[in-house]
Length: 183
Image (tube, rainbow, N blue to C red):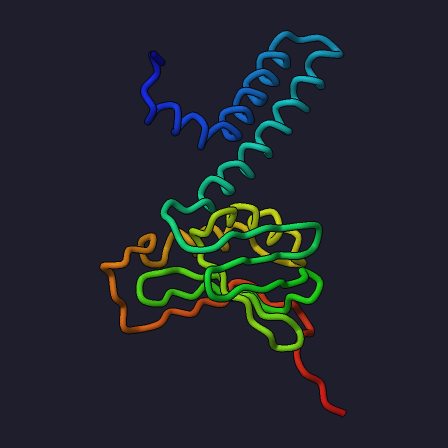
């Protein structure tokens, strides 16, 4: 018999990275407070690393969406793969020219466009979609705070009972200089 409730264990597991980052920052603060020529700079460095890690963990935590959507997302090196029940595909990060967040009939979908015009649609709540945070962070010039804010500002997580007639298509990122050039 486990003395810890399953809901609490699930919350601790979901927030484990953030808690570890805060623990590192707290340890760094305690080390810096001990004083001295060695411990103060070491503690401040640990505090700064913990604070930066905590900010990234907080954004990653907000990026992860609850709910279930069909399909599996895999990110391998510089390639995003989506295996859906009816559709799927691959996108190479160097080939990516546009990233949009689409809301259609209450479900939010990542819309990834390649340089050759091919599109890949990935539901936000797909299994493994949290790996997209690190993949998207490698895109040149992307504002990760705006990306996370866009996820929080649209419609609620997908619910099959919600039917929205209007489609919301929000541009998150576009590669500079991308487009078709005719000579």
